[in-house]
Each structure stands twice: as C-alpha cells, then as structure tokens.
Amino acid sequence: MSREIIEISVRNLNLWYGENHALINIGIDIPKNRITALIGPSGCGKTSFIRCLNRMNDLIPGTKMEGEILVGGEDITRRDVDVVSLRKKIGMVFQKPNPFPSSIFDNIAYGPRIHGENNKERLVRIVEDSLKRAALWDEVKDRLNLSALSLSGGQQQRLCIARTLAVEPEIILFDEPCSALDPISTSKIEDLMVELRKRYTIVIVTHNMQQAARVSDYTAFFLNGELIEFDETRKLFKTPREKSTEDYITGRFG
Ligand SMILES: Nc1ncnc2c1ncn2[C@@H]1O[C@H](COP(=O)(O)OP(=O)(O)OP(=O)(O)O)[C@@H](O)[C@H]1O
Ligand SMILES: [Mg+2]
Image 1: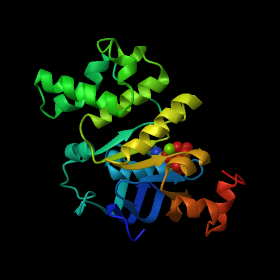
Image 2: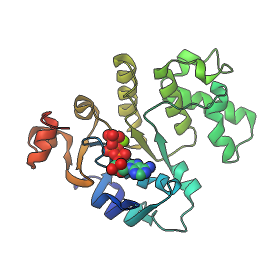
Image 3: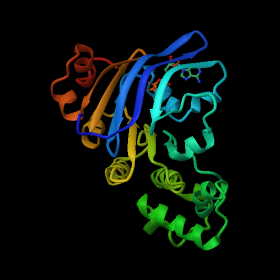
C-alpha cells in the first residue's frame, strides 16, 4: 500500500438515515489507478458508502453525513462543493442498466452536452471513443440512431459505462454492475474494468467473491456499517486477519 498514490482518503465517515446509523467511523485510503472491491452481506452499507463518494445521498431526505472525504486534497463533504462537477469527476454505474429512452448516440452525448459541448463533430468523436473504450462500438456502430432500449442487458450495461466515460471522469463507482448479466457479458465487463484501470480509479461493489478475487487489487470487507478489514485482495482472501472476514469469504454467512 505504501507504494500507491491515494485517490480518495476517507476519515471518520459516519452516515445516518434518520435514526439508522448506516456507516460507522469508516476510514479508508483508496489507491489511484487500482480496482478496489467492496464486499459484505446485504445491508452492511456498501451502496451507502459509494453514494457518499459522489454525494448521491444528498438526494435522500433525512440523511446526515459526518467526517472527511478527501479527493485530490479537497474535502467533498463540504456544503459548498459543486456536486455537478463532483459527479462529472466521479461517475457511477448502477446495478440495473438504466439507459435513457433515447438513441444510443444521444445516451452517450447527453453528459457532454449538459457540460456545454455542442459541436457536432466533437460529439461524434466523443461517442465513438466512449463506445470503443466500453467495448461496445463494434456491436452498435451501424445503429447509433436506434433506441438504447433495443440493446441486450449486457450491451445496455456497457452503454451505461460508455455514458459515464463520455464525461471523462477520474473515478468510476460500480454498484454490482454484473448482477443482472450472464457469464459472457460479466466477463466482458470484468475485462473492461481491468482495461479501464489504466486511466481510472475504480471502486466496485460485488456479491461475487470470485469476481472480487479476479478483478480487484484491493478488497474492503464491510459488516453492519463498519469497515472490518481492508487489504490487498490476494492477502485478504488468502490470510484474512479477522474471523468475520474469513467466515464471509468462505460462505459461512452472508
Ligand atoms: N434510501 C434509504 N433510506 C433509508 N435507509 C436506507 C436507504 N438506503 C439504505 N438504507 C439503509 O442503510 C443500510 C445499508 O444499506 P445499503 O443499501 O448501503 O447496503 P448494501 O451493503 O448496499 O446492501 P445490498 O448488498 O443489499 O445492496 C441498511 O440498513 C438500509 O436499510
Ligand atoms: Mg447495495
């Protein structure tokens, strides 16, 4: 870990939904250009945690967040942070692919347009680049004007990844991106993440232990709102320090 450049530094992070204390004193350093997997049983706070990283919890009434999240030296929990540019810098891909009901082209061009890009040629280039980086270009290049909803689930998920890439984020958060996909689409997304790691910092929530072991460099194990253990993936799976980590990764609960 000492060799790594830290992209996101979280200190004493606490989150409440009303009375429910969902994240308790989380501290973690997420390294740049690495894949960090978040694992843990349902309801332990994985989604809540990644939603803190791009202030998505702001959209849920009754939430309270305390602590510090430094991204590039800036504390993004501060009230005066520009959340629109924060979410441009930190993109998110959800469990269920959620393309807009518009063309493949317009799905990808949406973000750049919102951020002020109106030049048709540049948009065409951004769309092509993003689809190529998301490993979808060859499958859709002849039908960019068709509805995104005409794509298969696995293609839709890669479209959502392309849509995220189009605004040139630095960090991408994936919340169980493969849980609705077949093994072939899953392996495409996994290969893609490994490729994307060269340019982006990636955080992925997954319930699939093999997936965490296959793609991630670091793994964080959450339980009941706490971060129990965080280490290199290889070490965490081979020689976990905590009994509860071992129980979870060997399938004894969760
Ligand atoms: N929008 C919300 N409003 C109120 N409570 C919420 C909300 N989202 C999550 N919670 C609560 O926060 C806790 C953590 O939930 P979270 O969704 O972060 O878990 P998770 O680890 O992502 O679970 P899963 O693996 O099932 O997706 C749970 O107690 C949950 O009920
Ligand atoms: Mg979740």
